[in-house]
Every structure is written in structure tokens, then in C-alpha cells.
Length: 84
Image (tube, rainbow, N blue to C red; front, side, top):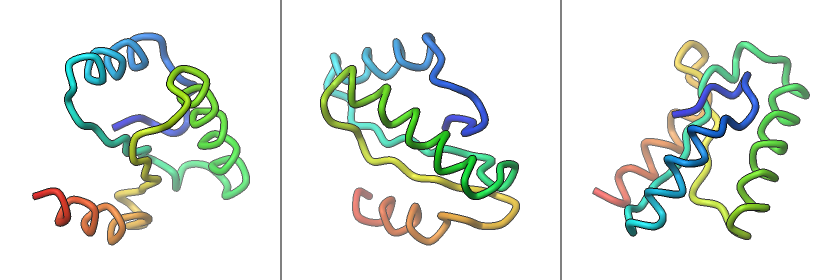
């Protein structure tokens, strides 16, 4: 889970790289999307996605969410149900 309001952090990228190196599947859930205006949320997501693509050429499953507004809840629950 990554706060969408912040740029990619070195420690988060290092953790993700370790998971990939160890063959551990992952998905990234960007939280607090409701705290940004729609366009700012899209821009923040695209910037983070760009960082991930520059590192790996591909990205794990990415989700934008908000606990407060329930944004992304159904899509995330559907994804979880497919892997459980």
C-alpha cells in the first residue's frame, strides 16, 4: 500500500525489487486518492507508474483506492478473489 500523494520513495522501490528478486508476487494499492483532485491523482499515478516501468519495463497489478470514498474497492476485491 502506497500513499498516492507521495512520489516514489527509494525504500519502497527497494522493497519491491526485493520481492521481485525473491519471486514473491505483489500488487500495489495506491491509497488516499480522495485526498487529491481527479487530475492530480491521475498525474501522481502516471508518475509512479513511469518510475516502475523505467525500473522493470512492466508493472505489477496497480490499484487506485480510497477507504473514505470506496474508490477501487470492487476492483481490488475482485482481484483478491481471483488469487485466493
